[in-house]
Image 1 (spheres, rainbow, N blue to C red):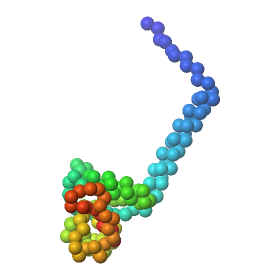
Image 2 (cartoon, rainbow, N blue to C red; image 1 turned 120 degrees about the vertical axis):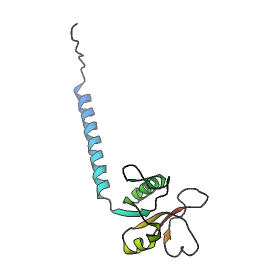
Image 3 (tube, helix red, strand yellow; image 1 turned 120 degrees about the horizontal axis):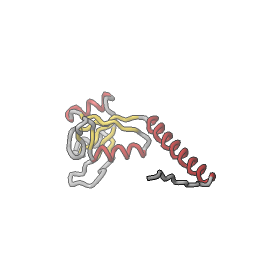
Image 4 (tube, one colour; image 1 turned 90 degrees about the horizontal axis):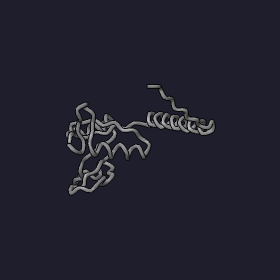
Length: 133
């Protein structure tokens, strides 16, 4: 059996256009990665509350709230890092600066004046949302 070679002739201009497009796509990917790395980072605290936020097998915070908050903060120009916290310590953690924001809590009488509330992030009977100070 003889070896067959394909002789594809690509016009030089087409080849150069494809190379230029590939290079531009590569540069775009680099600039997005560099831009994401340059975003100011906020630390968000929440308790373990699956499926909204929980630690996955790699001990990385995961869940619906992580996805929503990450996207929302990215649209505002921030990177976000989640920490699973002791819920009873949430106020102390925010006031000390250990965390910047509390996520996944519910509005209750008496707390409205303590925090800035973003309101309901998605529909749920108990009306959850995040609170930032």
